[in-house]
Length: 327
Image 1 (cartoon, rainbow, N blue to C red):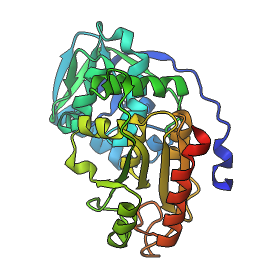
Image 2 (tube, rainbow, N blue to C red):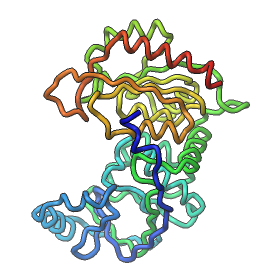
Image 3 (cartoon, one colour):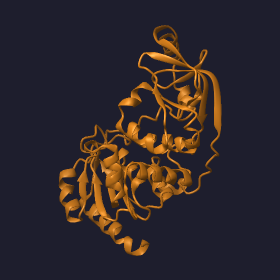
Image 4 (cartoon, rainbow, N blue to C red):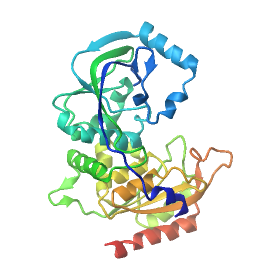
C-alpha cells in the first residue's frame, strides 16, 4: 500500500463557475485574449509554462493572421483543456464538468475544438449529459466569444468528487441503455481488455496468458472493436475486469458497485494511481499486480509489460474469491 499512501486523503476544491468576456478560441482548443494564452486552456497551469517563446509567437501569428475569425453571439460553455481528447480524461474530467452544468444546457452552446467531432465517445456521451446544442470550432478558424462560461475542474485530474463521478456513471448507464427493468443486468461477466492493438503499454507475453484467462472464465475484448455504447453495456454486465494501465480501465466507470478490478502496472510506477482512486470513488474492489517491463530501455509510462503467469493466476484466484467476503 506504500504506493497509494499519498492518495488516501485528498482535499477536493469546490467547483466554481467563471465567466470570461471577449475571449478567442483556437481550433485546437486554446483560449486566448489579446496576446495572452489563458491558463484555463490547460489541465495544469504548469503546462502553460512549457510553451517556448517561439511557440507562443507562432501561435499568435497563426491565429490572428492566418485563420478566419468568426464571432459567436450566444453565450457558450467551455469544459475542455489540453488533455481532454483522451478517453480517460474525457470521461472523468470533462463529463464531470458537464455534470455540474446540466441545469444550464438550455441556455448555453457547448463549444468544442475541431478534432473532437470525429471521436465516437464524445458524440455518444454528450446526449446522456443533457447537451442540447454543440458547436465545433472549424479547422481553420478562430471563434470570438463575447461571453464564455467555464466551470473549474471538479477535482484535480486523477482524483474525483465521489458524488459527481457516480452521477456521471448513472447518466451514462441510462443514456446508453445499460439498465434493465430492475437495474443492472446481473450477468456476472468476467472481462479482460487487451491493449494488443495499442501503440504502447502492451502485454509482451499475452498469447501465453490467454489460456489463463480462459481457465478463469474471462472474455477477451478489444475496445477498438466496440462502439462507446457497446463498451458501456458490456462493462455494466461485468463483475470482474482485468487490464493493464491505460484507457480501457476507464471502463470500470460502468461496473456495478462492489465489482472488482485488477490493474497490471509497471513495477516502478508509484505516480499514476488514477485507477486506484477511481475504483475507490466508485466503490469497487481494487487489485493490482506489478510487472517487469518487456524492454528495460522503455519509459515506464509507455513500456510494454511482461506478466508473471503464476502471479497472475494467484491474483485472479484472490480477486474472484473476494466476492464471498465483500458480498
